[in-house]
Image 1 (tube, rainbow, N blue to C red):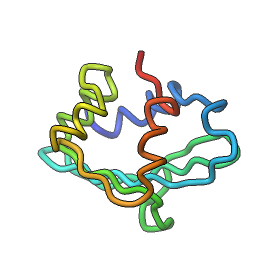
Image 2 (tube, helix red, strand yellow):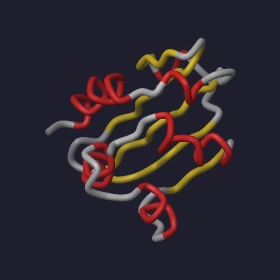
Image 3 (cartoon, rainbow, N blue to C red):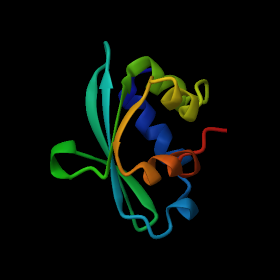
Image 4 (spheres, rainbow, N blue to C red):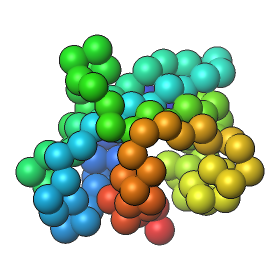
Length: 106
């Protein structure tokens, strides 16, 4: 699976009820062989992939392509990945804590 393919799956996993009142943007800096910069805009209980240069992120997450794919497939717990240093986060940490409810993988 490619990193870009995970975003279509994320939109299917998106939990609109958990996004009530949120108008935020999450930037993902993915490193590794399948590196890229992506931005997810959450607004009006919807989410969409937007060009990263078009928004100012509220939260920036940096991780490897392999870790990102493992997280989106439910094979790696995001909180454990953060605590072990596999994910670097800057910005709105309260938003970071909401991600498992916004995009439940199990």
